[in-house]
Length: 353
Image (cartoon, rainbow, N blue to C red; front, side):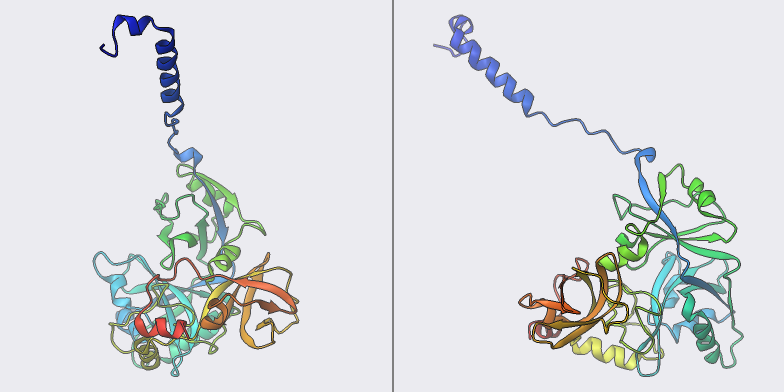
C-alpha cells in the first residue's frame, strides 16, 4: 500500500507521527542572528602616557635608521609597504636597548618613532651619536602628538578606519590582539577622540582591570624601559622574531652579528612569557621565579591584577609543567598562543632538552 494513501492520512497513529516529525524540524531551525552594526561595536580607548614620539627627519632618514634598527626600514617607505613597523635598537653587543614602533608619514624624509617616555632622552642621544656626517634631525614631538591605543574589539583583526584627517591610525604591527595605534594631536582629549569614532562604535575608558598594560601581560608582551631594561636581554629573547620586529634578510645594522648567529643556531633558551599569579608580588622582592627546590628559572619584569610578564627559561618552565613559585606563592606559566606551532629544528631540540 502506498505510504501516503487516503487510509494513512486518516489514521490517528499516522497523524501523530507526522505532527511529531514537523515539531522536531521546527526545533532544529537555526535561530536568526542579528548582524552586528556600528552601534553595537564596543572597544576601549586609552592614551599611552608612558610612550613618546620622536621625529627623525632628513633626506637620508631611511638608510640612517636602516643601519640601526632590527627591522627592514626600507619597507616602510616602499609602495604598498606597512604604515607602521616594530623594531628594536641594539648596542654593539647585540643586546636590546630600545623597543620602538616606526610610523610612515606623508613626508618621505620624515619617520616618527614611538619609544618609552622614560628612555626618550637616551634614545635621542643614541640616534644623534650615529648621525656622523648625515644631515639628520632628531627631536621630540611630545608637544604635538600623543599615542593612543584602541583595543578590545570582538574581532581583533577588524580594520579600524581613520575618521579624521588629523589622526594617524594603524594596526599594532606586532599582534592583532594588541589593537590599533592612534597618533592624535595633543589638544585632542579622550572625549574629542572618542567622538571621532562614533560611527565605528562605542568607546569606553580604560580601568585598572581593563587596560592596555593588562592586555599585554596576558599575552606575554614586554614593552618599555622597566619591562625590557636596556642591555639585559637579546631581541629574540624579547620575541622580536615572533612579533615581526626583526628582518634576517636586510643589510648590516648595529648588533646584527650576534642576532643573526643566534637565529641561525636556533638555540634560544629564554623568552618573555605571560605569567599568572596567585598572590600579589611584594614590590621590594627579587621577583624571581623559582622551582619548588629553589632553582632560579627567571624573573618577573611587570605585573598587575595577578598577571605579569617574565623572562623565563623555556624548557624548565614549560616541559613537564613543574610547580613554580614567586616569594613562596604559586604561579603559572602558559605558552603564548601567538608563538609559532612549528618551531625550527634546532629550536625545537632546545625546547625539548
